[in-house]
Image 1 (tube, rainbow over the protein chains, first blue to last red):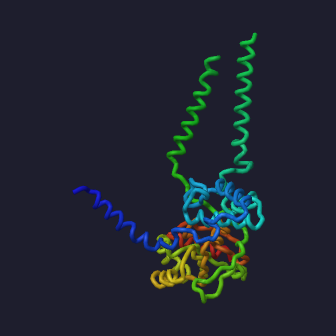
Image 2: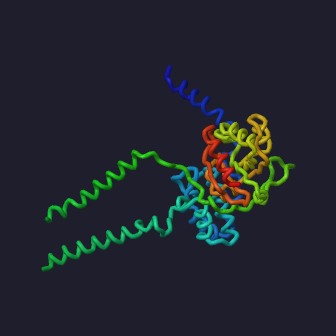
Length: 140
Length: 175
């Protein structure tokens, strides 16, 4: 006899009490969680924004990628706000006001994030100077 | 002198490795904290726990009395664990308003019968709109709202026995 049926039985018995009451929260019931907006342009800008917002319960997925109920409810917020005429940046700002920069994959420039933007420029400059001196020397 | 220049990239790389190794040994804080502390409770108007129960609106919070706002759900296992602690806080005189996330009236009634009902009122938030407006990222979470309707404190996760005194103190401080 292999240990696998036993293991499977143990896992089933462990997950059963959680699976039962969890049934109510398996999907988002928000109307716009999985329904595209009628206006293709609005849907495109909503989709672009959803790919840049972090799912709060799964944390390493965007809300466009995640099946978590919370991600569905966030997609509903994004779509309904954009349908109501808000710009994607207004919707992003609404979420950042509540969850901080953590919620967005496109951080803004502020006192904590400036090295992210400054360092690549600095590295390019240093590389440029080194290259210039090397090439310049060869030409002599 | 020129040799020294050559090992600088290597030293930078070693420094990077050192920082990465140090960070790996540190416990990771995965809590997503609300940045709404100190700000007014977002306006809301939600249906009550059952279809004939009165609606629950944010206006309720601006009557001078601090309250707890407990974000929970009947499908949430840690919410069962914190039920006795909410009961204890209610017994000490703390009014608790519950917001049930993605829930059903029958499930709520059954939960309250089984695990006790510490709530002054319960609202149903089927699409987590108020939860998102609060900056809450999971269940259970508990917010202290002062008498002017300002969010004063957020407790993430179930309230353990050891948290009861702290939360009571935060509620007292919000008076």
